[in-house]
Image (cartoon, rainbow, N blue to C red; front, side):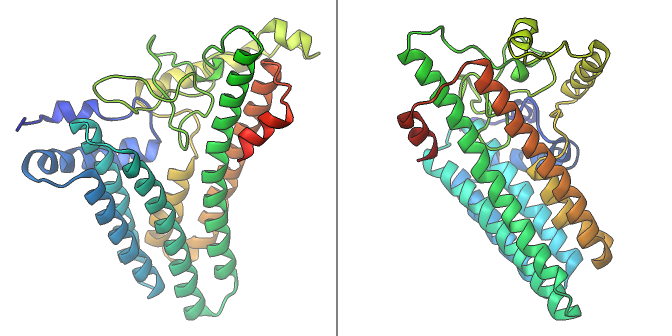
Length: 321
């Protein structure tokens, strides 16, 4: 059996990821991946189950008002969830069922932890605000994970429609080009860019994320003129290009508040800070996450206008079903 090195494990990291994962999870997950891959027979699916069990323990801790323990177990659950992906890419043992299990396990963990947090604080204080908090966290998380695959399907529907009409093939989304690399990688339909050119790119470690927005203007001058819009301020755009390059050098995605940061704020940072921080941090991170989702929907709207998507009834059914 092959012995893997830490460099091999580092190659399985996503090209760009959330800042929480890059700085606070990957350094631990990579070192845990090494002995797991070299000295155990644990499969990615087995690790996903362990992650889910740790998530259930976290929910139980929250429900009994053990906030610090709940935060610790949630962090461990997410860290093991990162390890299973690294092992799958390292050994090439990922399966379609594993993708489903990982997806469903994440949703179960978040819903149960949100419920546990709401139940524990409500029984302790009688404040119905915590019930609203738990419901809002669960709904926002589920909305995000329903919205992202649907946006990816919009692109696929536009691509198929252009092919059927004999139009020029759809190129990479300008907003998705990685300014740091001529070899852009694919987007994950849930946390990467839903408008990347291809779903996956073949290679020794498939499934890594593609970089995301602010690298080029999504509407070049001809498109902007056709839509009756003036030129975008160059200074503003250059600022975002520089920011994107800086973040890319550190493997950090340009959208700084995604689902991962939202979960970290609600289930790790706020519980560690204390019960007083639960509602303020959840509200602030939820608002930022919602703003990010609105931005992605706006990009989708720009994308469909840019490529002249005049969807038929059949195309709309393809996207929604």
